[in-house]
Length: 113
Image (cartoon, rainbow, N blue to C red):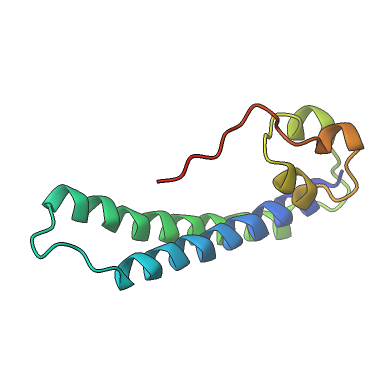
């Protein structure tokens, strides 16, 4: 797998996550909280803005890194991407990944809050 292409795909994923985080921030801002919300809860909610900004910055950084890499540097994708648990993420980062790498994690749980 070309390293510059992987770096660009990581940049794209970070941008997508930043957009999702901004969406969560917007959704929470539309919620009606108690008149006297705990200061620690407010700080926690402000952390979402920090996450969004960090994801945006990291996405820009990875896009710039991708543009600076020599185009002929390749790496073995299987040892690297096999560490990922999310099926969709592996598919997005390595669209031509072998089927064994694209198996969904059967041990994960969805936790609703």
